Image (tube, rainbow, N blue to C red):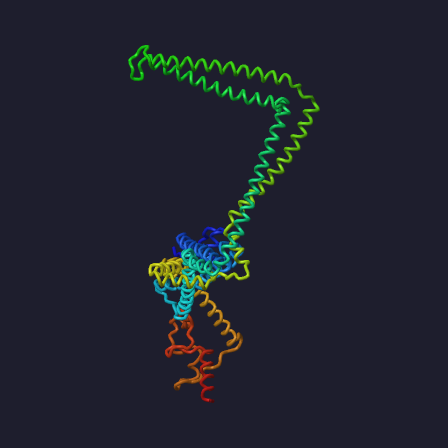
Length: 515
């Protein structure tokens, strides 16, 4: 079955596929008459164009921020013009390159099939558009190489520029640094003072809370007794540890585990004496600990229990101190945050102080200064110049990949042949309709054509009417058929002239004779 003559209803494209077809310069209705293989080719070219659009958007966004944004900042509003220019280039590729390339591919396919409708004008126009597009890609690749090189070698470029800037403003750096450091020192002292105040308030709040729970805890004698009791508890733990160590030594000496002969010798007796002393000390500390506990209990019993009014007074004091503590804590957090900001922005503060000085010298970090430094670096190191050229070539290939994929690659498609065929047949039908309309104007119905004059001695009767000498059994003569193809502007010498064309030629000859 002929694929060119039988329309087929292909799948309906979704939104993303429609975008791919628009980027590839493809008519969806015509593509639906093509086999699925053509859909893959069309989507592939559209996907490449979409990737190129994303690449160009990112590239233009970086270039715009490099030119118009302050150092170290990114301006998101520059994304809008970046997207616009990327879409503009993709639209140029879709309508001036891809569509023309599809038509030329279709003409080539028809020529391979034995029907040549190619003409030089179409190819010349396509070649001109392709040349202009390549020139645009070359210029864009050059700019890309420059900006990408500025980004890659940004540190090497900014280093000599920064050195010149510091050299020109070295008399301002010392005072500005001292001013910023003194401010940081004052902030540090404020944080230290606030921390000490916070520690005192925390101790007072803890004391009030303990007094609210146990009124005897704030009595000086009770506090002294508690400290003494704590010391005795620590000593008791140390004495118990000494007893355990002495018992271990006695066991080792009795069994001869330390290299001496087992038995009850001098080393064993010394270990036993050490154990007895440790036990005696532990017993003494135990007695002292019990006595300290008894004194503490007696002191607590002598202190009268707190009544409700005392507890309420302590509670109100604790609440007031807690509010003060919270306020001081918020102030401490604020001071710490200010100190952190000052420490983190020290370099920026020093730079601002230098820039606010009346005799400040601005840094030459503009685009031209960066280009000059890049040129100096490239002249100094040929390897860097080679890398810049390599970036140029890669950028040219990436930016022109969508056009190269369509123009340079040969993938025969039914879509291209259908596109060229429909364009040619539409032109032929238009010309046929035009000739029919002109014929109806020149020979209106109801008017006989003029008689043909005698030519070469033939009678007037021979020009019209049936032939009396013709055989009656012969079929009647058929009118001459119009040849296939586009009608000629002028007929061939061996072809009879049509009436309108003949009259036009005679009128033209008479006009020439009159002149």
